[in-house]
Length: 290
Image (cartoon, rainbow, N blue to C red; front, side, top):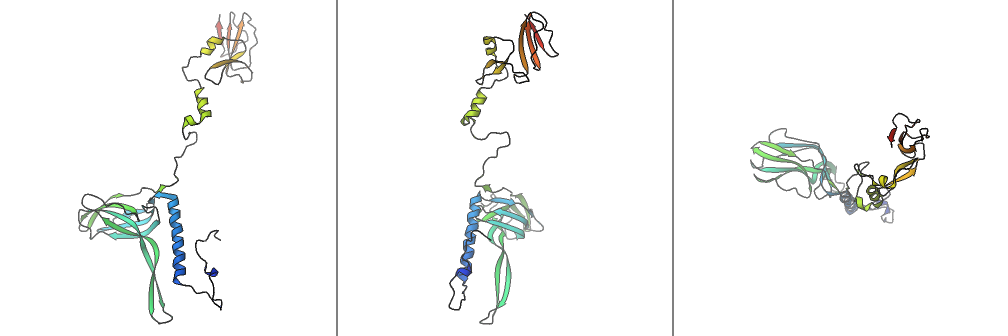
């Protein structure tokens, strides 16, 4: 059951002394108008400009006919949706050489006849009720320009009348409607917005070392046995005690001097500095003889 009902329920209307409720034409028309208004508000909330939702197919089956099948779109003023299952429009009356715009217009596209006998007069009466919303029409321009798209239409195709019973479909229009709340998507790993306004990220980026940067801090602070170079968080280098187990990085510097049997820290690579070859070195280690 609907949470909100944008119409007046017949059961809520006052009844006569016998408990009967009289239903007037105004009851039905008013309810329908309210529902139509809600649908229009919904369309405007979603789209700011119209376009084609489902292109369907557009063809020239014969002579000066343009056939449109399975097309759905939003009118240029973004106030209503129009749909066509299978309709054709004849351009026979369009002047040869003129450019035209085939559209789906906010009109009854089809109707259903209901026949009945009036209970009072006995007359046979036929009512034609709308059964499809959207009618294929042609808007004629001139021999140089296509006409503009009216607000109450969904575009279909640009067409040129080439002869008394011939035409060319110059282009089938498929431009999508514009979403009112549309925002640029951000792919995984991308950053949206202004980077400089994201101060924590910007500071982290400012502190990074670029390829080719001179490691001046290494030279100024010197090298200490058992210590490894680590970023200081401000773009520089600090020497920190090697923690082992890879916690101090991939390489450790050991100043063993003349002690060839200096213990080797548990890191992938050791940079040995000394006057004698280190006996505990492993494949991949480096030795600077001083």
